[in-house]
Length: 298
Ligand SMILES: [Ca+2]
Image 1: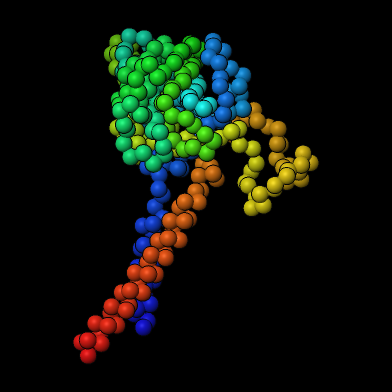
Image 2 (image 1 turned 45 degrees about the vertical axis):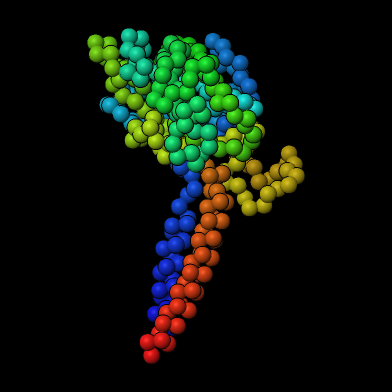
């Protein structure tokens, strides 16, 4: 009996491990919050961007370190996604083309569990430092994109929108990688280095497994240190729990890795429970079979 119990325990652990593997194709360890709103493009970014969480594309994914990086934010409305990408690139360079030049590349999937890019649905967006569109890998077609760029003292800012032909709603989750390409040597107009947010392996252009998760939210998350278990149905302005400077929205509320409690997804817990249940049923059946076959041998 002890032996049976041990086998049962081992099988349970193995199955629980299998079923607890996250259901995303994209990596939920990198989760960016997109805030609802419709920014107007212009020489100066719309003030509506101010409270949107920012994320960083500063992981070298290809080439050598040219000390470039980018800060990006995402907004959304019923039909479009909007990106603001503020790039630090000391060697602003026009001659190179496509991803060999100074450029922003955005890779998107219409859901976070999309396993491969689908032509006409999702894929890559390429925007040069001039604001011009170029065909990225698995390109989303140009007519779906509106883009512009302005030069800054430290590089350039790209603003772009994409219409995937999908109606969005709060809570939707997509796959996302925001990449910058840097041509640092004028005499050799090719990509010197590339930096990413969720993908450090330079695979996002062909494999959505290397994307992070983009969560669509109605508004920017409250800057609370750690959510308590009580949901606080009707919070009052005089909440004693928020002693941590609740109005401090100017400081970045999200850091590079996008570690976010929201990414603890309840689906994973459900899958673990289902896994354990399935194991219990399988193990029970196995015990019955073993007992029966034991009796037959006797
Ligand atoms: Ca450059």
